[in-house]
Length: 304
Image (cartoon, rainbow, N blue to C red; front, side, top):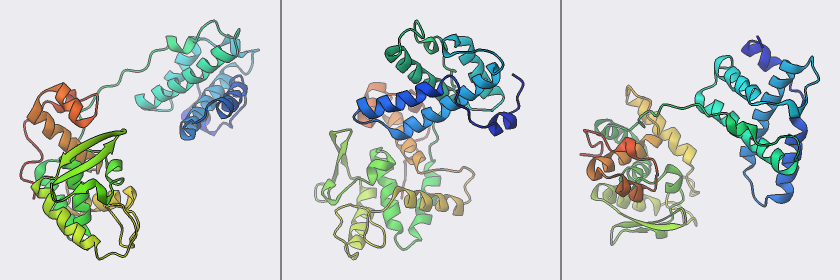
């Protein structure tokens, strides 16, 4: 097939050999699966319709049926996405996962069409693992200083330091409530993946957290959440990310750091201290930690 990217994308969506089973799969999910991720289904829906369009454009002048589908068709579609559509490997693999899910459903509930799940014979694209970004401690200090310039900047600083010193995900920080912190004994009590985790409140965090709690007490609110916005409602991840991004830009740093890189700094710092994969997995709750074990500079040294 010699279509360009524009020609393929501008061609209208068609209901071809896969669409019928895609709709049946949705009915199956609604009836038989108590809870499923609808956003994931939307991705599958989009990917399968692309594949169906590809098959239609390839076989529209023949009597092609779903039972005629082969591994080669899947491979050619994925190659088309990679070469013509310019999809990244992770996106191409996402399309293969969608095809595998639908094929699994067809093989289980519509027996006789395929002898086996042919999509399992198609390998995923191997992706090169690039080392996760982390923020150098010199840059961290610049960002924190810039955040402090705002009226409620100490709040953003506390969020940053919790991520960097505890290694928890950004989303988990915004679930924290007042009863999760013990200022007297200096520890954070956090529920991660339904398991209780206790983290020490290090001195650099304790000072800022004390200042933030003093500021928080001036806000009229009934909320139990630790981090609030200026109006007394729980602060959103989005607003924090925007504030962090603005601070990075205002610092004129050469790298476009994101809030996610703060956790990378913690991971690298712990990897520098522990140098043991199992220990690092236990502390961080992350399976793939090898990339964090080799670093010459501890990015959390001398944080102010």
